[in-house]
Image (cartoon, rainbow, N blue to C red):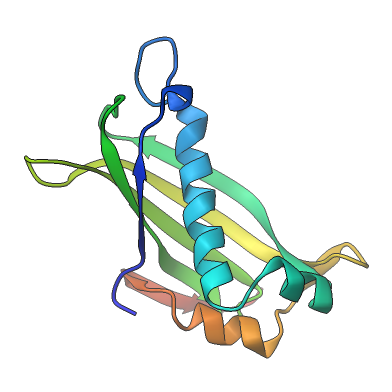
Length: 150
């Protein structure tokens, strides 16, 4: 897959007192994009329950580049930046672009470090094969690499 994107129109409830996109909404948009991809590629809540495994985040960081306001539309993309070869840990990148007549303007970059947790034993886990097949479909950054386990 070359790209994976979700388009969102900014709502009144997304704004802060300065009338631009509230900082926490960027993170919500990233989560929306990630979970949409997982669902569309077979990693559904039912699948997570069946395998007793789910995603967890260690770090979520956003670089704010450009103001987004009411009436704007944004496009959020998803890319895999690095992962352990068994996909037990991974880093994903979301770029949020403000779309419009003047082209796409990069507005924010979200970096997420995550892993899989066994929801029964509450310990980090390796994902089942079906999850690996889904992760193979995630577009890669130009600098993508498999990291070695430590």
